[in-house]
Each structure stands twice: as C-alpha cells, then as structure tokens.
Length: 248
Image (cartoon, rainbow, N blue to C red; front, side):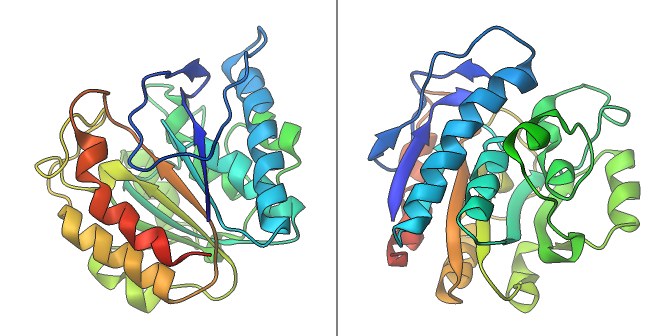
C-alpha cells in the first residue's frame, strides 16, 4: 500500500495534522481564490490523479486527511483507474446532508450524499465523479443523525448497520473503505472535533476494519483524522491502522 497525506480540513491547510501512520507522499498545493468547493476541486484533482496512478500500478492507496470530503477525490481516482467501487463508510455521522437540509452548512457533512449523486454537485462535476449506486454503500454506525438525515436514509437504498453487524453486510467487488475516526467512542479517542458519545470502542472498530480487509477487494482506503493536533489521538490509532498492513 501507499500512504498519501492530504493535510487539509476542507480547503484549509493543516500543517500540524498528526497522522497515525507515516506518509510516503504529501499533497498540499497552494489553493487559488474561490469558493470552498472550487478550492477543494483543485486539491482533490491532485488526489484523484495520485489515486488513479497508484491503483494503475497495482498498489492500494491509503489517503489520510483532516475530513471526509477527501473521499470524493479518492473515489474519482478509483473510477479513472477503471474500478467502480462499493463503499464501506465508518462514521459517527451520516454525511448525507444537502444545502437545503444542513442546519450548520458544514460541508464535511455532505460527501456520502454527493457520492450517490445528490447534494451540491460543484465538486463532483469538476472531478468527473460518477454517482455510486445507493445499494452499493454501507454506512457503518452513523449514530448521530439530524432529522433530515434520518428521513433521507429511510427512503434510500443505503444500508445502515452497526459495527457489530458489518460482516453480514459486506459488498462484493472492489471496495473503498472509509474510516472517519470519530466513529470511535470519544472515551477511547481524545480530541475529536465532533465527538458523539455512545459509540463502539476502538477495539471493536479495529476488529471490523480487519474483517473488511480480510474479505479482500479493498481498492483504496480513506482515513479522516478528525481530531485536534496535540491530544495524542494519532498514537492511540496505531492498532487500528495496523489492520491495514495486509493490503498490498
């Protein structure tokens, strides 16, 4: 596997991002003026190109960044390399907001909805990202949902499962494995930006990641390191990222 660091939170640089594993490549361009989506399009174009190159060379890219929107670039890169992935998405949150449903307007709450063809289309359009079929997406945990997200998921074909039931819901075919580390209970992981109490312990999430990797077919991994620098979260994640070592 090849570890690619993208030290950004949305379009803002995070030069002190504490990653849980060493990176072989860092993508950190100076972004031009524009809206956040326009700026992220420049950043994620480089992510997509790097992912496509790694996959084309027979390697599994592990892309570590400061939020979940980087996944749009990763999936676009997989598609460019001829891999139309299913998605296994670990997160304490649903990430299925749209501009007309989000009370906060936080763009990091949009990417799953964008991946399946909805929400703001600026960035997917710039990347040439094709929608992933809803039935090819497994949302794992997502215990902290706003009412519009509950309503959307109830009417969608996205499979929403707890960590303990993931093994029975794994999709066939190439998989994009996405882990927002805030899926872990905040008692086990300090410094989370958006902590959601009542989640699975770190050990359970690591076991579930091992299950996904052992099933085969993981084409790329995204790690959303959604925590503050300096609180020791990166060190605590060593056991979880060790589960990725079986990837080629």
